[in-house]
Length: 558
Image 1 (tube, rainbow, N blue to C red):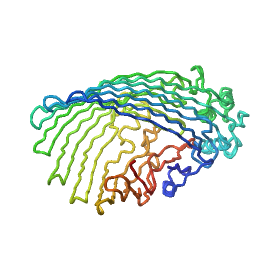
Image 2: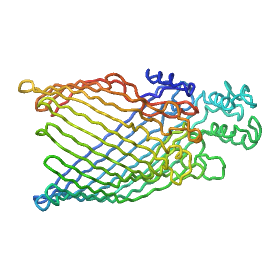
Image 3: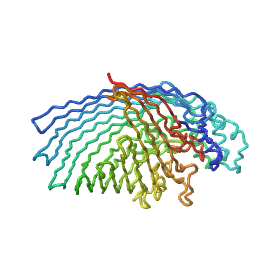
Image 4: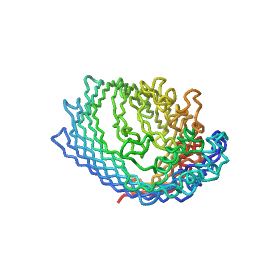
């Protein structure tokens, strides 16, 4: 995974693509991540009579991570995550269900309950770097466009405007931000399938879910004299250009950079500085599904289903989430999903064919966006996804299996996606596709396996995946420019084909095995996410997906 430094002409997509293709990633320091995780899971099953089972499934997991890295993804020393912080996640789950059959197998029934408890704590040490002020000078100079504010002034490019203005060296700024979230979830559920007539089955499922979360942001340590001094100069009218200078917002945003700005406890300050918060979120929802299926002539089945689903809301654990008294919470997402389809087997089960058509309508669709200066989480009132999926498995012989699939998906924010909302970051999404949602995805593969003698088994497998163009950014257009709706640069990932292969030799009973494999055989370099480069308006960076990898896997049973 890499984040190429693409701080060039924002429309120079040729240079950007060249950096991506060559996996050019710049950094002023070596990342030093480490993590440790472990977990245990168990399942206990108790037979009850001849037609029911009581099943318990429990798990506990711990995750610990420490990391320090260059957070501006450039060769400049601008903004860093410093050593000493870390993330801890503890998760515990319990599920108890009773399931069985009745009426001679005509009814398959299940009832149960679920409980989970998860605690997240994170401490991050942020610091501005030695090149921060010079970057500010370049940004301010570019922002004046050579106008009367005289970008050649020592306050601007090549100089240190913040230190000149305030007397504070930005490279001394250090801040520790702490984030916590504790969530508890419980639910009761049932899922039942009844064969009401030969071949005709009805399925009904219900799940009542209750979610509660406590979230907080605090700042246990801050060494930032730059922000108060910048605000003092702004209030005194000492900016270049005098009182009412058009650079006021730029000086505030750069002198009080959100991730390191001192957190304030009240809204008395008119500027949107970070604000500590301790808040709670709770929600409940009845989730339900219904399905009718009919088996015409075994094994050909048609079906239609409807599901009302739910994804809990929570907290935006970002330093700026509660700035200016904003609500750090985001709402739960709901979906109504419709599906019709066919499942069939032909030619003595040598051919399997599954066809499905689907339509999903999301309300309060959850979106996470990085703007280049902060993370924002918000809900879009409406999103939709409609498509068709075809899957097939063909077995021409006992040794050869061929699989294929084709999916068409139109996942989009409809033109009326904003509802009654008026915020630009929502309005700019309407009429665009969802992020990383190609219209076409196709797969094709084949596996050949055979026994060698009486004790060995050999196989070789190849898989090909094709996808059409897809957007890789949260926003398709700059939310600040809804009139021209100019596409953001370097957003669309072109369609591509990737090939994976695997071959293995092992014991015929699976006691041991050796497998050689390669993924992305042709080393097709594609983007997973494209985003605004930190603190460089108009510049774009990207995280690439996995390049070609190969290896050897050993398997064994003891």
